[in-house]
Amino acid sequence: MSDSLNPCMTCGACCAHFRVSFYWAEADDAGGVVPVELTEPLSLLMRNMRGTNDRPPRCIALQGEPGSCVSCGIYSQLPSPCREFAMSGENGVWNEACDRARARYGLPALFHPSLPDMTESYGIAGASQPAEHVQSPG
Image (cartoon, rainbow, N blue to C red; front, side, top):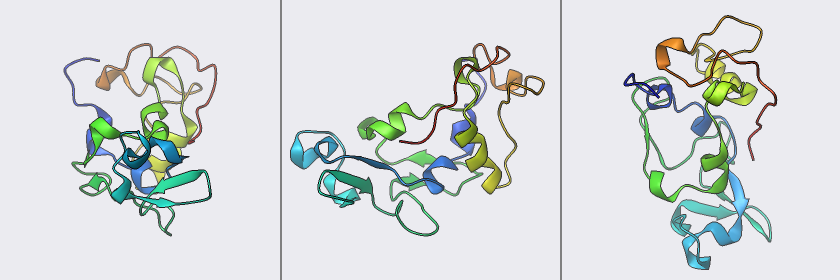
């Protein structure tokens, strides 16, 4: 990444668009790192971040408002879906889910393989290369 601001720091759309569900053992009461008090049971083997199963969804750990200055209150303790969710254009890979969440908040797409490189100003490595797959939320 270049010295320019990471678009995720002014976005947060994925944190207020998708349910964040993960295996129950990722919570700290089962040996994982996700604070259990910020989770709720989803099924026998799954948990989700509180707020993400609501309509509209919004992760309890999201600080700030989507589309402005945002951060994650548990960034060093993220569940696997958050760690694995790539910003669209990262490493030249289009993430349709990222751009879809951004659109919900009136934010422009970061990358699309059929459009000119929109991520150059963000310094995303390899963003002008064609995408080979689309990553969906976990």
